[in-house]
Image (cartoon, rainbow, N blue to C red):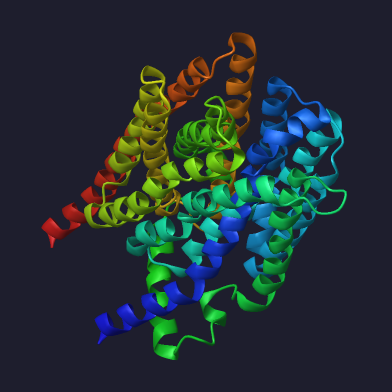
Length: 436
């Protein structure tokens, strides 16, 4: 009977929560990186150089970092339904207003404001998953939710390319329509979130009493086993800092690729629509790979090794794109890199919940995401600066491969630390059993 309740409850939770979360994150990621496509025409129209674009694209992550922890603590206090709705409506408005930037200064101001508006959305979603799903299900379900990353490129890249190629209405240029058409849906979805989401399992009237009781007992037992519960504990934790280092490697690699891939492909004299279609290829590969990777990590339980393998593949793929500079070589290399980074990220986000709970989880997850996302500034800026100084993207790709290799070392060390701690916690239990 318990097994039946477990299966029914998880299935109902997955169908109720994951599809909307996936759609919201898809729009979120699209609004964050569509500036890479807009740049194909916008940069020349408003006078933005490669280095200024890289700096401005990355500026988002500075404000995002500053406001991330306060935003997630507010979500924990006021509830996911209200706070995520607030985030989505505000970022949708700011993203739409990008259509009216007039030069480098207004571009950088709007990128900063977008980071302020969006801060807390992703860690809030990760925290929300920990409110509803027991640990053994989080790898695959987080991967399903995070398929929004490759899907945003898979769907958004051809869409963005088509808008740039075909949408020329009124006095607005196609890149301005790009921001408007891809920004407005966030406002609409924010309203849907406000009326649809439920903050906590105890408020879920759409679960039966038996399902609610089973779920809350599972989540309660997890809280008892977690050893960090205060914000101060999370801030002082070496494990949290190691996770931030690993996440920074993800951010450097993934955002470096996301922002610059359209312009890298432009080097091969392709049309905007062709660039949009070809830019989707790495994310087609990643979409299938990440769910399989996440499910396998749930079965094996070796989270750290799966994350390390993804980071390593990410670095190797970038280096392969340098060694084989033809358009085929670049697409294969970046596809491998994207697969590795994207597939490892949802597995990575199951790790903080294994030792954080309560306020520590809210603040710690936000801190990991905030510090790690500084890599979102480093990646785009590094490629832009190298491109402007050397005239080539090759050394820029090599530069963003290095943090991924650092992430491999950091996550393996963290895995060793967590295994040692689990072993020490089990020893007293074994000793007491022997005495009995």
